[in-house]
Length: 290
Image (cartoon, rainbow, N blue to C red; front, side, top):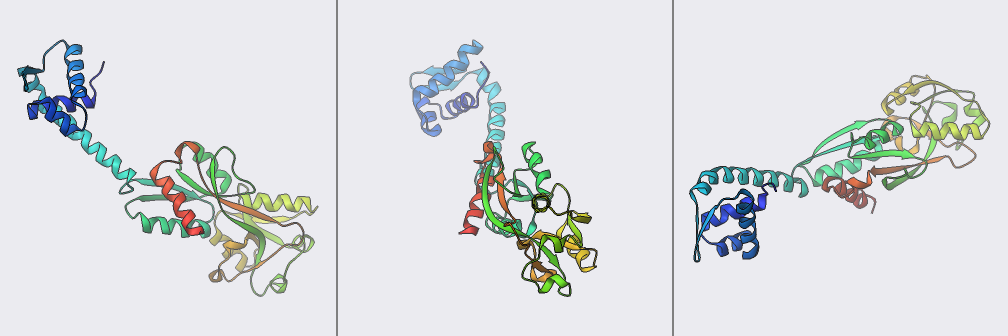
């Protein structure tokens, strides 16, 4: 048997109050439970820690020797409990978050930070297929990812469905079209995300199905870089329609044929879904979507 916190609490309370019944009342447990904790300690260490004189309980000399250390241990335990309880109450803690598309993640993250200002956020932008293994390895608590279907063996909340489109400057020939064909798109160089991007993988799978060969001249890891490259005439950009904002100065143009779309999810590991900060992020997303 090893010392337990409950045994130490019972010992300290009895020694301080001088009564098993008073200790039980203070600790919120039954008097027999207090007696059992003390008896287990004394039996295991083959010594007497409390002198029982009728209704009065007095600490023995040995008990007096360990009381100060016992109180130090209990004080540290209380401090640990307060820290952990602060995390449970979302008054402290850290949330490690990964996202593939800031336009979709940031409104939810902003609402979360407003609701829980004491939680520290560590956020990193990466391609969806890079985020998932890092979540599985414990490097992230939650991730926002693009996928063609719900990530398997994970807790996933669907956020939105987005069309994959071509993006061009207002002066580009495509800008005046309501949609373009795969054949038209094949005549232009393309600027896309990196190969681990789900948007790119879905787009290239659709192109292959349409029987077209495309020319990607530049692969970039950030939306800002794609916007700059498209404005500089390097090529036609490929993106989700929801990524394009008025401040980008680009025109999203749908592609003819099969409905080319991807979904966006908030994801965590099943065993982590009840962690207070993670549950709060899912609750925030639900409120944002309602």
